[in-house]
Amino acid sequence: MKYTNFVEFDSVYYILTYLAKKNNALAESKNGSVMRKHLERNHIPKKNAEAIEIFYEEYFNPYLCFHRICAFATDFTDKRGKIKKKYDTHATPYEKLKSLPDAETFLKKGITFEQLDEFAYYESDNEFAGKMEKAKKEVFKNLKS
Image 1 (cartoon, helix red, strand yellow):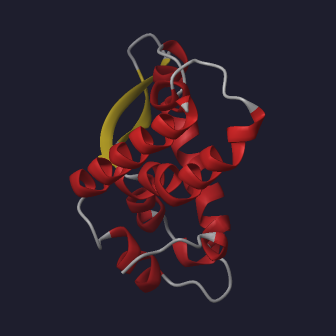
Image 2 (cartoon, rainbow, N blue to C red):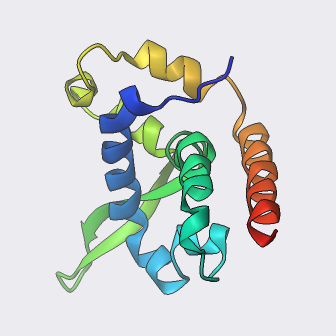
């Protein structure tokens, strides 16, 4: 089963990306963004933009949303009244979305969690990460030529 057209899952991507950014912003801003980590810090010529976009759509975005574990914070107040964060929940952004009350209301009309589950659990997190790394190497090999 191959999913190459994610247009119908667009609104879910925005929600998942928002959840991931909101809760991992501090850690990832200190260490460089996730995208720079995966796509290096080199300049990418304009002629190669389409290849990068295809990589994002078919591999990177699904990896971030459905297969990459994120830490989600819970706020608590310490003895001095200062609000602190405790990162005690670890899940993929998709799993976090599913755990929200009335999560179905965030889905685009006609999209169900059963459809998204079929995609999310078709491959394990490690299998998909390996597939993404292989695709990334192929993209960069072609960029250098």
